[in-house]
Length: 135
Image (cartoon, rainbow, N blue to C red; front, side, top):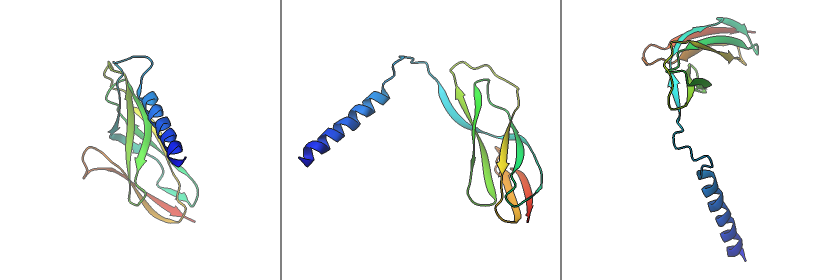
């Protein structure tokens, strides 16, 4: 009886996998990618108090007009390294010189000095912001 249940559950997983792998619209020309881009500028305060969020305005240039901000990817340790993730959806995208700006919110739970490194294409030259947090 256990083997029949196991086989039935395994069959359901296989069928679910096949169903999700199939495309209903038959669009063979769908293009999507997520790419990290470098910041062109970061502005924001240098001081705050414990548990008070501060916002940094992070500017970046997507590679083309299909680029849309997705998220900030960051390390859990300090100095915190932060990267900008941009999604590109579309196969034929015009080039752009536009600069986009997204807010990055930082909240410290203890007092001290915190270093945020917004990574650029040159690993030795990130945009560094130092925040002093007081009680």
